[in-house]
Length: 355
Image (spheres, rainbow, N blue to C red):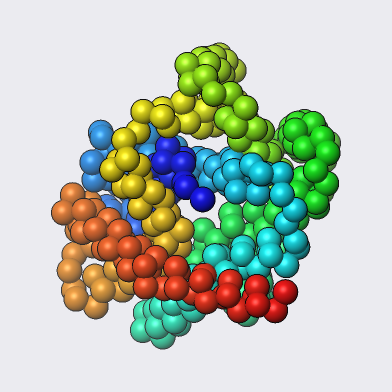
């Protein structure tokens, strides 16, 4: 199935938003190697701040973009032909895509944290690195509300939330073909109500992160239906623009602002040339690797700087920033082509042969 280039581009941008937002982890006050002056550095002193200020200040919203993009992509993959999908096939594919890299990066961080603690008597970046949190990470439940703090390869929390929503998507949308649009709308409304109740302290049972994930995911599913039904690109752009204006008036509510951005990106799909489309798809393939490798790389670089005796002020320099991103992108390319893609194919073959 051909990928949608505009969505792949937005997915990669979202990953880079998170990576640049997390650049501040080099300045973590728990990093005992940093001087007081560096710890006190303002965010606007980070490399290329004038150019990347939106990412430095709001890059955490990249995770929310992941949620809504996931909903759209799942709609595109599983709902476009209104076909039946078996439970084992659906979750087997998810396992084959997500777990191999998660496991490798989890073990990588475990080794790095062990080395850091043995050499320097401290962990780096995330500090709830005990056997309890390793168990949560190992079984993809590190973001379900059982955790006591950020641990190991921290960003995996968002993927663990999506797994909960996958069950809702499969049992409520895929398994029953009738009224899929209506059910998606109903789920969005339910999540928005839960979000409001939770924000007003009327309901604290459900993790707010799970609520946001579900709300945005099913908004993505609904946008897929809009994209699939509307062939008028100008109308798509108009809808996205109107939602964007409403979101500005409404103080950038994420359940209006994020859909508006996705719809606007989609409205340019037919204008993307083939060679550019291939490049955007290439970037989209790097997203998962970029997302999961950046924390292990940060820990590795902090250890390397300490071992080499280089002054930690190097993290303020543009050259260090560019080297960091270059290594990360290179690592993501190698990870996708020589590990993720091969493991996904091998696992899918094994799992599907048993069905």
